[in-house]
Image (cartoon, rainbow, N blue to C red; front, side):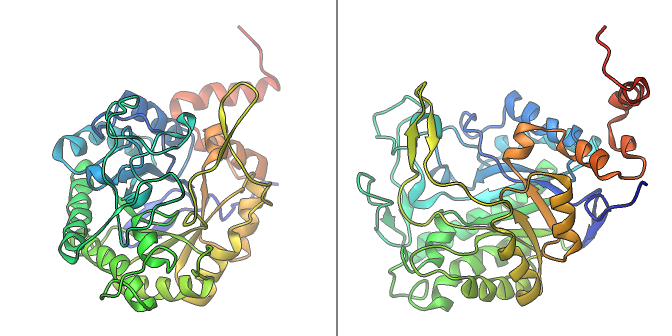
Length: 387
């Protein structure tokens, strides 16, 4: 018998209503030139809007050129880049989804090749990926791993400049038509590297104890919130646990502080601070991530801790593979939102298929009208008939 799920119930954050609780997690595509969104990005992101996702995030989008992971990553440090996003945000909105952007700075993990190029540092004279590498920056001059260059330790004045860069990027994001911002504070990138004692060895106000190491994250968030409209939500992505001294308890403390600033949702991932990206070659030479199998929903407990201990809405991500699993997470109060990455890459229409599988009332109504009549007819026929 049809029912109304929590997964597909509309939800309001501040003055913004999402049609459901399904979120496209930021997915790096490494396909920009000069930081500009292209036809590829329009096609890529539009698929998820048509596929029924409630909130569609861009990939990590750099707030300055040094902040790109690779030379081919998106940016929003100038007005031309903001302008290039406008047709994309417009189409996402027309499809009933909400366009969102993740603002990021890769820090000491910047200036690298894309995964299919091995993920190694790019030398200044290597133009394989369109331009040569550059000097990376970080809280301290510690390289990512053996064979990686040492980043430049940021001065206090340079830190102030980066905080301003995040705020400027937020204003451009608004002009570009985005309705949600997420600040990337995870995966070993710049903000995360300030948080972790493994990478932050400063002895000034931006280092030392937990309060000092959180300062950059909080000042960036405060600066973004100050220019971001009161009626629009602000997310923050964390690595909830990691090696090198960052604990779940630390994440709860950070989340509580972010909530007082005006952050609305904590996006809960994990790891990334230690070592270079690890890749091994497959039989046909393609790079594949090394590592063991992770259980379904392995990061959901981190979102649950944010909800219950920090008192803030959280987004669960990581090996959530079907609609019933997602619905159970929400019904049990373990998270407020479900973010999908690889599952949506595998099936951009995952939300629409999940609604049908869950027995959602009038599930076919979720399809775009341009598709709906044909999908209904397919169901009436009981099977697909080639023409």
